[in-house]
Amino acid sequence: SLIENVDISNRIRFVDIKSNEDYLYEHQINVCILSIYIGKKLRFKENKLQKLAMASLICDYGNLLLNNEKYFSDELLNEKEKREFEKHTSLGYDFFHNETDFKITEILPALEHHERIDGSGYPRGVCGDKIHLFSKIIALVDVFDALTSDRPYRVQYSQSEAIEILLKGAGTLYDYDLTKLFTENIVMYPKGTKVLLSSNDIGIVTCQNKDSKESPNIILMDKEYKKWINLSKNKDIKIIKVLKD
Image 1 (cartoon, helix red, strand yellow):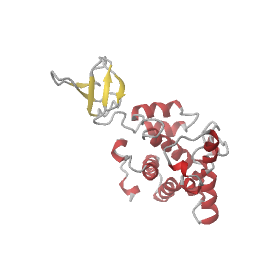
Image 2 (spheres, rainbow, N blue to C red):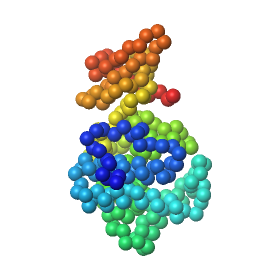
Image 3 (cartoon, rainbow, N blue to C red):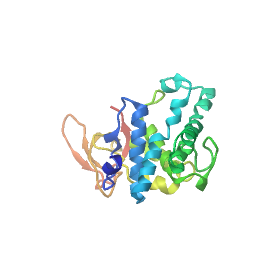
Image 4 (cartoon, rainbow, N blue to C red):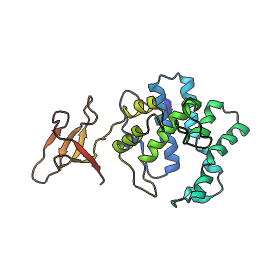
């Protein structure tokens, strides 16, 4: 049903599918939805989409095999605990490999979704094309969902900030082509986003401009008057940053 309901005709307004009520559960659903979105953009056939969807849903199962409740709490981990936590990749893969009949393409991302293109990831430090395509997709959307979620140690990044972070890692941490494809299909400033403009005005995003995702329509927040600005037609005014409510 997830595969059937992911629509690639529009860009992703990610705030529409997020919830902070249960991070672990919502995180896996979000990762699955976004993985399917990329798979459809890559024109995967139905069977391949199903394997990708399954892989994205079970990739973090190893978390449940860790013997430390702290990993599910809001406490920060020390370096030793971080190293122990990293074992969830191997634990998840070994479980599915030894105890189930899942296909290798469905379980490999459980092992590889924290690997990075330059070899700086874990658990094996593999790089480039040695990382499976499914793992590259899931790694990318896994980070995006984490960045745009409130965590115990920081507030969530805005979608525009998350896009910038991913693009900085394109070609080194994350597959370059996948990163470009993904970020080009995310709405940078969803409707209702509060922003600071280069004119020192504060505004609210009212709608997107199809051909200029960095320049949405804005309504200024001023007690004296209301003014709508189409940033795609006012090139001298830019969005400086996203403001938190």
